[in-house]
Image 1 (tube, rainbow, N blue to C red):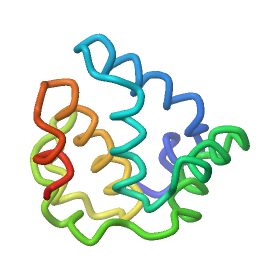
Image 2: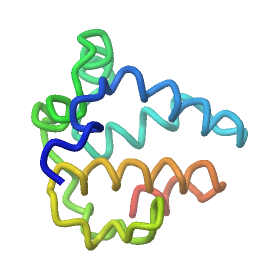
Image 3: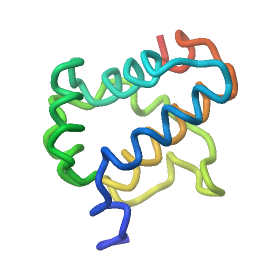
Length: 116
């Protein structure tokens, strides 16, 4: 999947879509932020800095402080693709994030989403 266009898409342009998806299901932006920070290791200020810079997904994940140790527990299907079987490391990180946001929008409890 080298060169997939999502890699060069601005994370800041997709972030509002994550928030809207969550809010349509009576979830909050704070919960979206908590998921993103859990997955990537960003704190609130670091996440906001990434949004302000308009970095693409590749840069967003490359600069992430530390991917959570429990990412291997994220399993399931997003857009017909099983996330644990994605070969490209960057695409897998993007799919993990999509899966977590999907779980939030489906009403799953935060403890389960955050694999605690």
